[in-house]
Each structure stands twice: as C-alpha cells, then as structure tokens.
Length: 214
Image (cartoon, rainbow, N blue to C red; front, side):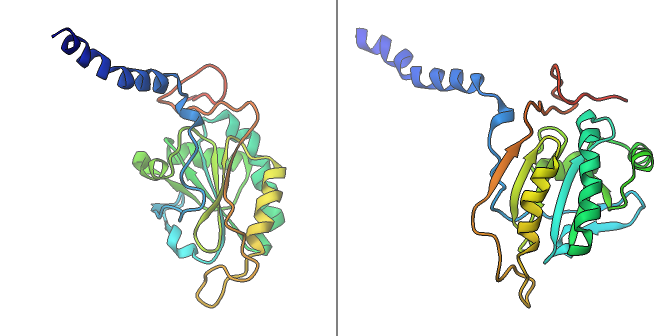
C-alpha cells in the first residue's frame, strides 16, 4: 500500500531533525553537570614527585585550576592566582594546579619564571581532566569544605570572580566531622565564563582563544 512506502521515511523525520539540531549546537556551551556535586577524586603526582590526593584536603576550601604552559589565557590569569594565594592562604584557601597535556619540565620552567608555590599535579593520560569535563584550559573549580563544587569558571579568572566565591566558601566553618556546618553556602551553584574567551584544547583547535605552542 502507498501509506507503507511513506511510513518508514516519515518515522525518520524526528530523528533527522534531532540530529540536525545537535549539529548546530556548540559543545563548548553545554553547561557542566558538576556544580553542586562532589568534586571527582584523584591521586596524582606533584611536579616535585610527591603524591597528592584530593581526599586528603577534606574540610578545606580548594581552588582547583586546570592549566598548561602552552596556554596563552593561563598567562593572563596567573597574576590573579598569585594574588589569591597571598590574600587568602592564611585564611585557609588551598590552590591546586592540574597540569593538562604538558610535561613536567615545561610546567616547572613556566612556574619558575612566573612564580607560584602551590602544589601542581601532572594529569598523565588526562583522566582527571575527563572526569571534570574539561574542554580546554584554563578552567577552575571552587570546592567547598563539604567536597562539593560550588562554582566552575570557564576561561581565565579575574579578581572579581575570586573575591565573589572564595570568601563565601571560607565562611563555611566545618563541624567536628569536617563537613560544612554553620555559615555554609546555600544550595545555589553556578558556572561562569570569561567574556570573549574561546576555550579550546590541542585536539580542537579553532581561530582565536587559547593556542598551543610547543
């Protein structure tokens, strides 16, 4: 019958329409599911050869910064990290750098030239970057005393972002069990993006934004 000849093509229309819509979406704009959820655990080697486990920082406020020495936008935010370290370290902020698709020597030389004495770990195989849904550096995660990600920053940090979120996290005093108690942030979580920033990785080169240099 004639209607049977049209049934199969017609049934495929919604699928084709969905695929077409998906192809028009920019994967870089998809919101992260992580804000509000526990930060993915990791145990990685530092640039100095020690081991660092995120779980060992339970009850502390952590600024987790994913970066690389070849990342131009990482240069723009580094001064902000230095100032955050100076301003908030004595109040309890822990900055941890995660070196993405880079070598130990390059990362150590980059830090030696620009300063920064917080721990940095090597993400060999990019497993941690994958867990955190990294599309391209830099990205930063603000982790509360209860281990949850309160805020994710796409692109280079600025002082306003740091001053907006770090004091809020530091104000949450842990209880005896190390879990955020009185003064903890309310259950409002967010993701932000630096104006004009185009986030890319070595696998997804685009015009503008961060570029890789060997």
